[in-house]
Amino acid sequence: MDGIDPAVPPSGTGCADCTAADPQGWWFHLRRCARCGQIGCCDSSPNQHASAHAAATGHRFARSFEPGEEWFWDYVEQTLYEQGPALAAPTHRPRGQGAPGPADRVPPDWRRHLHR
Image 1 (cartoon, one colour):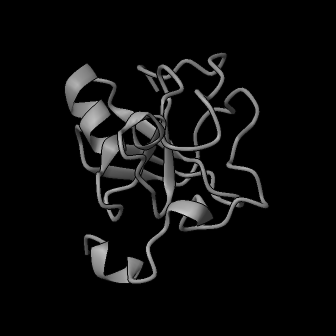
Image 2 (cartoon, rainbow, N blue to C red; image 1 turned 135 degrees about the vertical axis):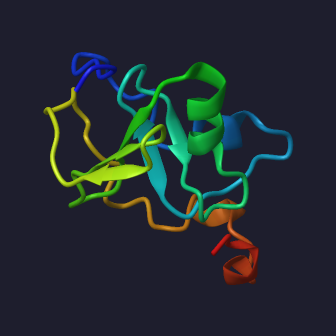
Image 3 (tube, rainbow, N blue to C red; image 1 turned 45 degrees about the vertical axis):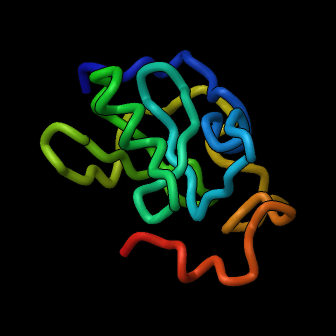
């Protein structure tokens, strides 16, 4: 899959843009840019940073950064791939970090904030 750099590690354990925001945001699920390793929040999350990153950079492939999920999404073709190349570790968020997260930033009515 052209556009994927398997050697690049993830940018962290949570959405980089949510963490950098003031006030800091929260996410539902996480996605990892397969080109540069940027971790962003999914399209169900309030800020949809993974899609915004793909649009801004042209980095077309993202991989789930959720435990037990290995699928890739192609933002250009709008296609799901059940498998792809192995990426540098870690391949998912810490198991102790729940979804949504991080726990101290998730509002009590978080379900109302999700995009469907």
